[in-house]
Image (cartoon, rainbow, N blue to C red; front, side):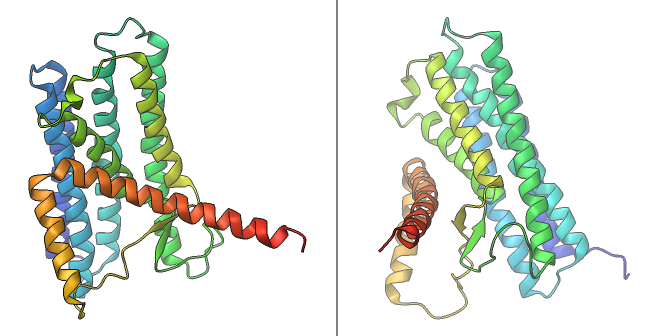
Length: 271
């Protein structure tokens, strides 16, 4: 019994892993299906559900006082699949549509795409390993100064969510972006975005952690209205809302980094 599994949070981790596997399955099926956009959209939605489940398992474990070393390791391994392999494969297959009708598609660009998505997986695994080390060390020398308000480096669920949000936005039949002209230039832009997300994960940039948001304590009534508006927006306009969330989240990190450089520049500037 002492070596048993704490069942409740582990079930959420299993569900997270199942969503990652489903996303991989849908992405592979899209390679030989006439409804490739629908399958890739389903894969992106599955990654979104995996992010939600990943956020719940940790909170439930802490609320039930059921945290364990096994649960932490199991969660990290599941995250490598759901937020590393699954979005990398989705990014690669979805990027192929930009080249389906393009004479600029070359073997070299295909190899570059394979390298970029592989680096995304490596960066995600390294990000998880760094987070695990930092959580066990109260005075980590790397990465940087810890803080409750932010993560050092982009969390791997956020990077996976960014890929899923972009695919969900452009693959949706409700928007005219599905008719965008395919070309090698679009593929290069997409690979640059994926590579940038991988770099964000291993960087020392600050990303908001949302740990200060405690749903168990009292909040102003306007907070409830904002949450209700967000849920309604996700239900009817999930493509736009999720894309906006990604842009705001990445933009906040850019703003923090810019303010850091400005602060250093002002301190070094002679009076």
